[in-house]
Length: 428
Image (cartoon, rainbow, N blue to C red; front, side):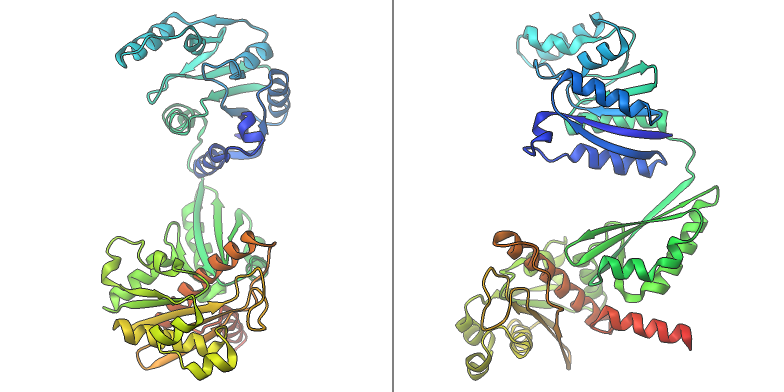
């Protein structure tokens, strides 16, 4: 089954609204073994909708549209599908009755415009909408079938799960799992996993985020889940400790679990991230047992007064220096009485600081009887101004949490070093 997605709406086309429906549909269909081959966005124009549906059905078995089924005059999907099918729009009496009853139950008087939602292409099937007013439509066209769903997300999802997926989904012959990695570039992962990419019936997708890459693994065949288990085992062998979790297991969850297992706590000292690390460490329910607190020492002098960073060190090197990160980590650990201290200092931009270029970041992790200082590879500068700052700050949070994870597990600070070790073991 090959499906194309068509989302309708000027607000999507012009970027006023993020196209979350297409993202959700793509994931949902993939999870049920339905291949999505294309996703297109068009505006509220009848001719453009017809053209897009016709082109999609020339390539795919079915088309799923979202949007354009509401009551206003710019909701044109039903009109376009009627014209494409060469049939008129007709008023469905049962649907009209349900609409009137729904509005009356809310204590309102129905408007004539709202009754447009009871107009359907002649011969179309209605897809029950248990979450709202506008039903979905099933329209048979010469090239295949079109499932037209509302644009309201919770209504679209309800119809999709209750009606459309049971019709489209085939036998569960596709098994998928997503592995989460941190601190390794997408290109490095892809090179490392070349042998997995070459396996028959196995497909990898790389989903990058700042300083993280999710690797979605798919296996096909009647023994898909057994094959997936074997493939995952090999990926973990190839990537080592770069894999920190699976599915929705985020870095903060992993760190929280590791700290809990050790009956340990952590405190954060932050400069350029301005409290973002503390926000991550306190996001988990129950994090009060593992996160002692944090100090946002953005001003240089506060690093001395609140975190006991030596004044002569700051005077000689400025706030952005590896020894400053180490002192901040030890200072916040001791001041807050935590088992571990994690600290970051760096330059988020847009201007250099203390002679350090934008993207320079140092991380310190102080643990029981040990200290590790990490000089991050210069973080990429994607643009200018606020965009640069946001990306660098987010990447710093990920690197800091990953270094804390590595310290808790006794792993090398550099994921590349782990790859070197694995290579030597394979050769030896």
